[in-house]
Amino acid sequence: MADDTTGGTTGLDAALWRSVAVYRALALVYAAVVIGKNSGGYAHPLGGWAVLAVLTVWTGVATLAYRDPARRGWPLLAADLAVAFGCILATAWVETAPHIAEGRPTLPVSWVAAAVLAWAVEGGRRIGVTAALVLGVANLLVHAFADTAGGMGNTTLNGIVLLFLAGLVVGQVVRLAREAEARLARAVELEAATRERERLARRIHDSVLQVLAMVQRRGGEAGGEAAELGRLAGEQEAALRALIGAGPASAAGPLPAGVPAPRAGAGRSTDLRPLLTGQASAAVTVSTPATPVPLPEHDAHEIAAAVAAALDNVRRHCGDGARAWVLLEDGPGEVTVSVRDDGPGMPPGRLDAAAADGRLGVAQSIRGRVRDLGGTVSIVSAPGEGTEIEMTVPRSSAAFKV
Image 1 (tube, one colour):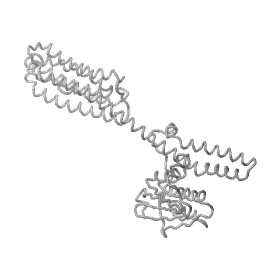
Image 2 (cartoon, rainbow, N blue to C red; image 1 turned 30 degrees about the horizontal axis):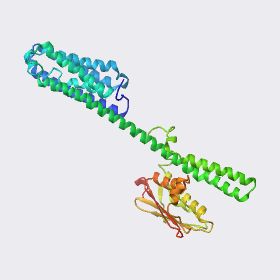
Image 3 (cartoon, rainbow, N blue to C red; image 1 turned 180 degrees about the vertical axis):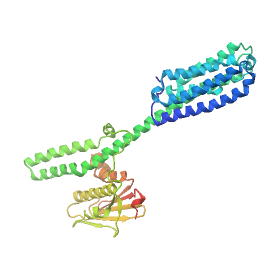
Image 4 (cartoon, rainbow, N blue to C red; image 1 turned 60 degrees about the horizontal axis):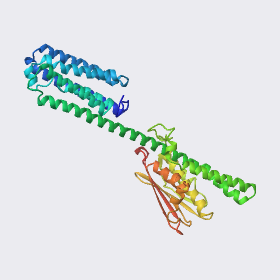
C-alpha cells in the first residue's frame, strides 16, 4: 500500500510503532490537561469530557491493534484518521465561537498527530502528507462551522503546518531507515556468504586442488596415457580454481541472511602444541613452550591447518632439500606462530600474481584462516633469503588463557 516504503515485521518497524504508541499516550495526557483546564468555558462542557473519553478508548485500541503487523492495513489506518477527524470537528460544537476565533486549540490538540505518524510510518512521506491534508481540512471546517469572522488564527495555521511537516519528515526518515536496514542485512548476508565460500575454498585447496596438481605433475613426468590424464587433471584444477575464486554473489543464495558458518568445537579447549609437533619431520623443526597452549578447538585446528599450508608451500616451491622451522609463542592475550624456511625466497608481487591466477594457498589457506580468527599475517621474503610467515591470533576467551 506504500508509495515510498512498506511496513514490515523487522526490529526497526517494532521500534517505530512503539514510538508512535508512546507519543499517542503522552499526547492523550496533554489533551486531558487542556480539556480539564478549559472545560469551564466550553459551550457544552460534557461534550469536552466525551471527546476525552473517545481519545482514551481509541488510544488503547490503536496501541494494541498497531502492535499486530497483520492489522496495519487500510481499515485500521482509515479508522484512526476518522477518529482524529471527528474529534477535531467536535470542537466546533463544544467550544464557543469567540474562543475558536481567538485561536484556542482544538479539543484533541496534538493527539491527532499520532494518526499522521501512523500513516507516515506505514506508507511513507506521501501517505503521511495525505493524512496531514485531511486533518488540515478538519481544522478549516471547525472555523467554517463556528462562523468566525476573524478568520483562522495563527495557532490553527501553525498546527496545520506542523501536521504537514510531521507527515513529510517522519515518512522520509522511515524510508531512509528501512533502506539502511535493508542494506545492512544484505551486507551481513554477503559477508556470511563470502566467509562460507572462503572456508570451502580452503578445504578444496588443502585436498582436491593439491591432488589434482600432483596428478598433473606426475602424469607429465610419466608420459604416455598418464600424460593425458595429467592434462585432464590440470584442466579440472584450473576450472576449480576459477570456480572457488568467483565473487561472493554466487555463494550468497543458500545462506540465510546474517548467519555465519558455524564454528565446530568453539566451546572445547585443545592444546595447540601436539597439533604443531605432529608436523615435524627431518626437514621441519617445531619448537613449542614447555607448558600447554590451550585454545578453542576450532581455533587450534585452524592455526594448525594454516601452518600445514605454509609447510606445503615450502615443500612445493623450495625443493626437497629445503628446511623449515616452526616456532610457537604463547603470550598473555595472543598466540603467535612463525614458519621460516631457507628456500630461494619470493620476488615482490608474487603473492598478488598467484591470487590473480587463482592460486589461493596463501590468500585462503593461510591469510583467510587467520583473518577469520581475528588475527593477522605478516610475510617477509626476499630472493635468496628465504621466507618467514608470522601468524598472530588473539585468544577468543579468557577461559583459555594460561
